[in-house]
Length: 437
Image 1 (tube, rainbow, N blue to C red):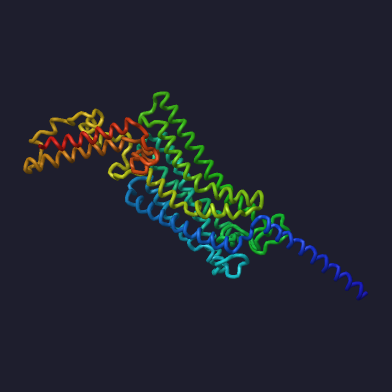
Image 2 (cartoon, rainbow, N blue to C red):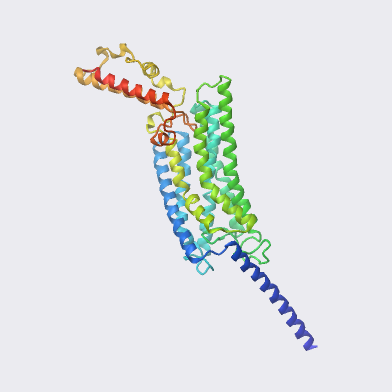
């Protein structure tokens, strides 16, 4: 009887050992084939690259914050102000990097944290998904500005409050859920959506000791699907906006006379930045979900481009903002702010704005040469600025002109007529200066 039980126990142990060894062998094979474990040199490279990109994103967020804070009287800039705060925090979390990973985590170089630091980093990174939500909802804002309100701030600024609230729903809700299921763990680079040990769950035959048993499904729901949404949703909105403006112009019902070509160009800049930033993350998550591959090259692509998102968004925001904040909130219906004489001069290019306004009796009580110089310069500068505020285009996000240096860099020689108009404005300014002699 004793020998029978001993033989049965030995058989069970052998069977269990064989199953565990087979599962472990499959895990090692999976890691070797998929690159789930990066070499130490690769980890060092990814860690350094991630921190440099995080620093660039941080600087970009600071620039957006500084620029948006100085222009915060406009709804578009207040939305970018909210985006900049989360961008700054995202840069800080990526500067933290794999130092938040618990000490002793296998195959993670530079781990100095614990479970608590890892969970906090993963939670905060998930919350900073607010940044892309802010950015993609600018497409809805642009639709309201162009199509619903005709660049009238009183008719489109209502959408701002809903954007500030709505962008936090999914990031905060998903972060809380992942926290509840212990789904925020080291993924080899930093702490985000993962289960432990690496390679566990799903069809691996390895039970996850921490986190859900379906980590790839969690990654699909909370990373891949949002990435698809970040690219598809604004693309649909902006393409529809461009077509709508085109049809409205074709029907002769385009009160602002904003050309469809300019809407298409500005939409391309806006959408191009989204694809540039989130395509690497989409490819990385897709490869891991569908083919169980963690490519070092794609991971480096993500670390360089996706992590430094603040830099790219700062460049785009620079393009979409004017140099002169005086005209920051003026739309196409604000010509009354310029005055009839200025508008006439800007529209006709004649050498006189309004001769009645140039009468010496209307000048302030200063010595004639000084008074005339200041008076003419003020009026010509106002005319030139009003001209320039309409010279290149309307900003599709608030109706102001995208007349900065970066606009010239992207669309250099966009229109010969625009360059001619600028030359005429400068000539008008010089003629006014000469009139004092």
